[in-house]
Length: 41
Image 1 (spheres, one colour):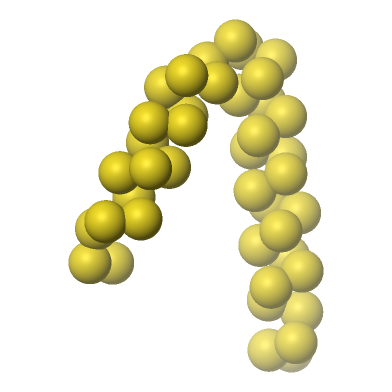
Image 2: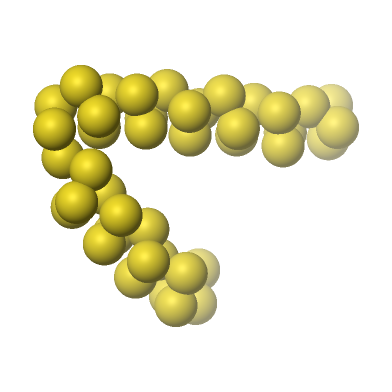
């Protein structure tokens, strides 16, 4: 089960990225992803 987690997360992030692009919000998404790398969680 633990081996599937990275693959599931990759599919999840791909789907989110596709929706972000469809809505034309790539700039906001990229800023949020940059900020999230600095958060402790």
